[in-house]
Image 1 (cartoon, rainbow, N blue to C red):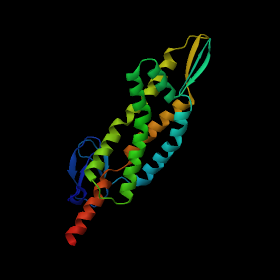
Image 2 (tube, one colour):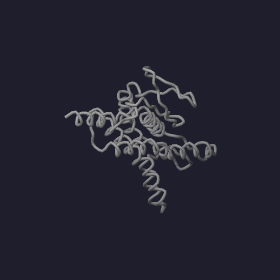
Image 3 (cartoon, one colour):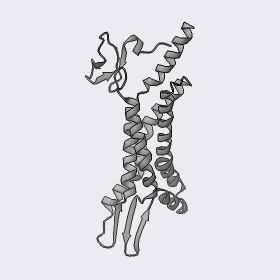
Image 4 (cartoon, helix red, strand yellow):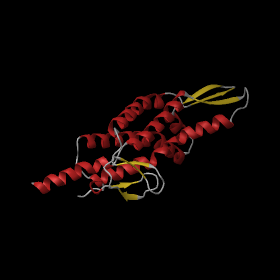
Length: 211
């Protein structure tokens, strides 16, 4: 298995242009768009771990604390993410309940578990199915932003539904925590270097060829 790095070939993360560098320097700029490029992101594993751990810490209050406070003449109601799912399900809106459950509960946890799996596999220099792990990373990076759906809903309702003393809707502390989790996981996916997945596979192939 021959990697692009062994041939001094770099791919630009901004425009996707693959280009060959003959210099011994470790930092280059894309010849097309000028974006700074690296053979490998510096301190990728430690940065990603820090962001993932912070997201794990915040995802607990994000699911336990209310994401929306609704005040009316009949009192105040505090809704958590799971409470919103239950409300939609019992209100004969099963499709919306499933969408909210997947986007706000399944996807954030799946992203964290997937990033944790990728980090551990890279640190252990695993050669297990590098194509599958690279594909998993691309999926994690692509779908992460969709878990902001309930934060968008809470923000829109906060801005639109304000009827003085009759009814007010405010974003709760859970919404802030959840939005922070989503942002952290997006940055974690960006800081992780998927090229590390192939380094172990290339090293394993070299050892086998020598043996």
